[in-house]
Length: 259
Image (tube, rainbow, N blue to C red; front, side, top):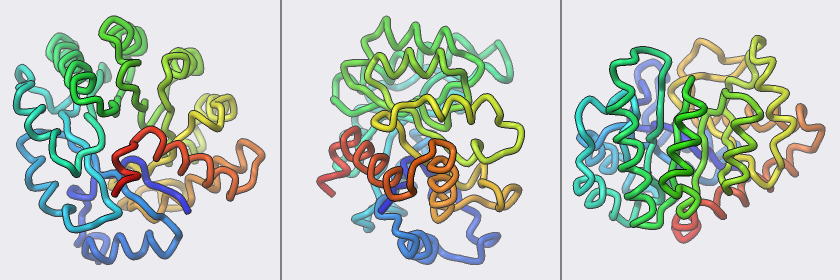
């Protein structure tokens, strides 16, 4: 049994997939995927996302604002109110993404700090998105005691130095289908170094479909392909990889284990 630790079920293009949500989940369940964490990217769309998944016992939710969707100051009280829902097992995704404009850095940093504070207050782990912002991400995590709530650096594409710093703070590292891409040479080496007890797997559906589906709409069923690829990279069996990453998921997202 495996888990898709990060997907956006509310953002799937069901017309392209020629499937509805029930069918998407059933297709994944047929591949022994036993739980799905549906991740929020805006607070405004959170109620709609929650409404789509609330009837599924094997789907949990997070609540937060993606750094590229944070246009104004974070409404911390709104985040607290929404994230207090029993279906919510994590805060995020939040973090820093410096890939595009420098103009948003200050807003992103303030939002990230607010998410860390809420995660510590509610004692729900963080889901962190980080791209081209290694030093600032780690520094803000340290300054605002992110280790008190814990969490995961999701869809990780940075270097081993950053991964190790996060792991040393008690965080997990989640790997998506990007690792299967031919040009992900450094990431493949990083994955080999990540301790098995700190590793999670994800699809980040509907984005970043793994080889051999690259360029298509991603979906949770494809987390099996990610798992197989990583098990081969690390020189272990699929079953060992599946068991470890599933145990890690429930260890981090303890409220999901109660679902």
